[in-house]
Length: 115
Length: 119
Image (tube, each protein chain N blue to C red):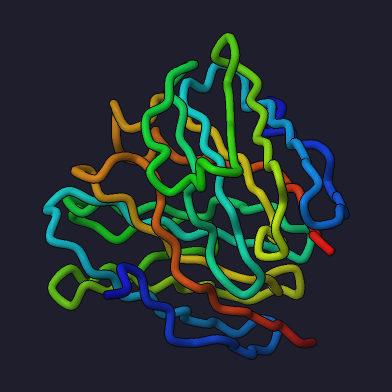
């Protein structure tokens, strides 16, 4: 079974609009962390935001926020006020504490922002 | 603070040839990871080092892939001999503690990657 599922291969949004990128996960480990990374065409993976399984509040980092719904096992990324520079591939990833520290990635969602 | 450095950025070889990739992690980071990212997929862990010891190499194809991290700093990943299916981007990442602290303090930071094409 897939540990991380990103069901949207591609998303399109206009500048200044908000967009939500979906991520669901599957784990039986009570201690885990969820990460979102951005990968522009240059190839580098850029860390955006982190949510721990015991965190009571949704994580926020500038224009990025994580809509964490633990019971539904979803960790959607919300980007507010999209910019042209947000066009990239976005990956959701999970680390299960019992399994070690390596990240398990989803297949990614391509976001295209138009003017 | 300098990020994770990788070289070369691009490499084209023929099958059955050998190739090596180099990674220099963020200064002071104890843990180093090598991931393989095949086109259209998310990265997959190949090997993880804690200082100069191997923590997890369960997904490393050991018949052709090898990696080392001498002195607990730089690392080299080698493929010998290469196959067509090894065409991918090889990403190096580092983190401060490798899970001992957990949480956001253990975020992995990635280098620009090496794009390998095997013909």
